[in-house]
Image (cartoon, rainbow, N blue to C red; front, side, top):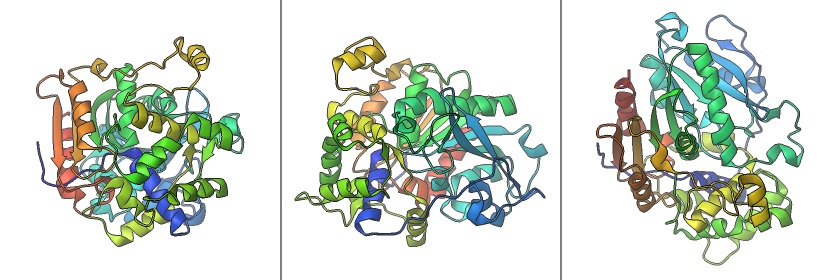
Length: 421
């Protein structure tokens, strides 16, 4: 399957690009909202004011969708916020009882709000809900509504001692187990950028196979060897274990002064232009609405662990999809039993597992060459079980914010998911 428009396949891309833009241009980013542990919006349940509400009340109540907020506790104690949209605006069918569940996972330095920036008829979660799916939206640890733990304080460095390995090992499996417990069904998965990486990593280790029915991967990330933009290259070289140790940065929040100083130092390097940082990282997005970008900058970026960005930079520097490298052989031996971190072997993903992969032609970080590397890892997949879409003029942000994504990409995602029923 092929479309003529470009791609958006990189997670540091949108992440780093957007927060650099926020800092350099000195845009004000709104503070995170608090949330209730359970809301049932649009069906007579309690509705909290937008200033104190979670994603359900702030994003769905005005559009007439029923929405529920849940807390999911991971095996290592993080408390994750998850939203459920059990039906479309026209209702129908017992609150999602017999509908096919689908989990939607965001990328790095973002949260579930990333999927909800356009009008409802253009937002993927609401399109799926209106087409009869039981939609669940994930929010990874460290983001505004998932910045909680059963014992750790987010103000302490221990809370932020994780990389994307833990998202694949704990976060995604915990949310899928929760959804499966509520629905009793296998789940479809849709991920963007880092949301594709954690799914691929987990699937390669057999963690999700018993719960997932299929996966749609938008701007898939597995390799970052062909990143060529000056800002991306500088960032990849700068996010090292030594930097983390010397700067004492466990939490990476683009709004913190210490992080702002670090980013400004990157921007001062000759040849690095931070005034067009989004395009510099993601490629030139073809189809974004200015008001949508403004809304994005009011709600994002979200904090993450510095260790996650270091891990991503290791992928760019070493060209290998592997677990976090502690940089000292003894530390790797302590964690992995070997001086080198284990490699994620994507060929271990079951060959009959249905995958839809959509990527673009102008992504500055997830280069088409890196996507070809990913596809080569899946070359033994069963015929008919791997569907690839190439969107020639899309860049990273287009896949979640483009005004025509509904027609170019989401229609293909919808068709793929319907075929799994």
